[in-house]
Image (cartoon, rainbow, N blue to C red):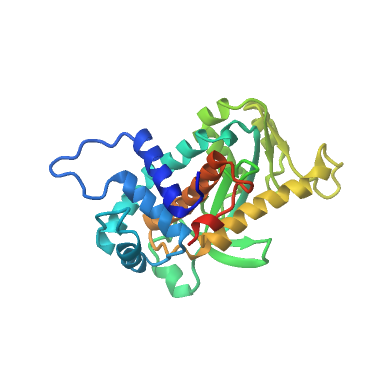
Length: 297
């Protein structure tokens, strides 16, 4: 099977159209279906179009054959924000349909999602109360925004994800994610969860053990070396490379969201684009599973 953007979007459209159960519309159905909307959102991210107005103009010229009807920018924005549950479901469906869903080795990490750079923005933003100030130790910088918590397989396929205020503890957020998605955890036996030192806590590890999860993390200072620690350096590079894909190739930090719904759907949009590329590469037998090169032009 050919690896290009047209083939990916066609396969994604068929997959989504087969799995979603779109409710019947009252009156005239929309000219742009939900399946087409999701494919359009994935194409926008893969082609690096940050501005929705610019993206609609580009799509009218270059993608008219795949999308016979394209809404105006305001209509596309409204449909996209309302499609967050659909995008989340599509991410989960793609993960389940790949070989990586059965991987019981999970990697967890959090990364900053800046949402404002000036004091007036912080004071006036609709995100106030949800977003907050935080510190990124990896880059030695403060930021105002959110943190993306991502639990994925070593290949980068998203399993669980959440956005949270940076002031909330990492263990607290991860525990809530695992409680909400207890059904997903129950589907996997003997989960090995790989993390950094930020998730270190004996009570937290006991809580994970009750859910059948073993935590593999680096040892703290003045702590006895933990089992499996020598392999962590190589494994930790995997989650860093996943974050680099999201930020370097999919412009995660340049999401442009200014409201709760806007930020959430734009982050989900990028996770879906990465999941779609991984899923398609897996189905086509590509040598590099998380490569986006074939789809960014």
